[in-house]
Image (cartoon, rainbow, N blue to C red; front, side, top):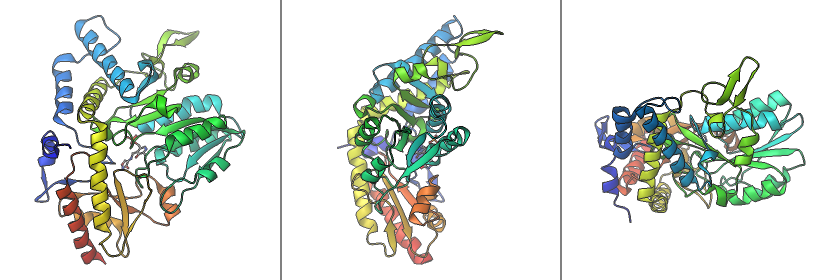
Length: 405
Ligand code: 7TS
């Protein structure tokens, strides 16, 4: 059992009062708060280690380079990658998917080829493929879900043809909480000769991930959703794929030589990291992963599952409330609508009581269309949330319903 008050004490922001009330932060799927270990690590970087990396022989540059590369090794270990050079630092999940679509996609997708997505994708895992498909004359096929928010596996498999080149699927849905059966999806994609990308934006902070065990070809995540700083994330891909992919952006660091007659590319992972990288971010991310490993992802998952179950049971007593996302395999996310109340009004009334939830389409407009909704209200849990906070949230919800319905 985790000691949640000890964990909370490591997050300075959780002591805030907002609108005269203690903050109840339940918008963790959007971004998580940061423990002192991460904040202090970033401060130490700027106080003792800051220099541009890979470029100079001076002491500080060597230190900053070493720390950044150690961060890469930690990310690789966290993901279960066999080689840290398979880890590319990106700005986050969105840039990771754009990199795959822009580099692998441009080189491998042609007219008439097919890309399979699902109804529950985030816009970050839709729009880069739409841009690619429009440029190449390719087609996007969309796998349907049932009313509980679970992928329909037979329908998913029926979408494959000899033209299917890649599948790109969310691992854990930000709007529904559904955990997709990643290994099964990988097996199906590979059986049909297609590659598969897993969008791990929500999964890495809630369920242990091992890319080799999953067997996927690409995996992306963002640091800010796993207690790390913003502006950094990673793409993992198998070395053979990365070796064969053309650069995504051009600039410093990604070259081996530049001549007017043409340029040649650096080795992995630098080929995909043009320009001065986000050293502070990489080092902060490594500190976050170290912190998560210290707490233990299994412990985090168990605590969050308890909170989710408690919240799910409690909101059943709120009249006119419908849960959106009732998958059997689910984590962290409680999305709902209240008949007769706009989600934004629910969010505003909860905010007046210090309870921060998300309302809107959660960057999954096609999913909202699937449910015939403009928006939902969403509470999402992290390791530092407590039973008492769940109670406050439910109490505030009853209050909101009385005001609005
Ligand atoms: N994929 C999923 C499943 C996400 O939940 C998000 C962000 C992204 C991709 C994009 O991540 P980014 O770090 O590159 O922006 N999701 C949310 C959310 O649910 N509320 O705010 C951001």
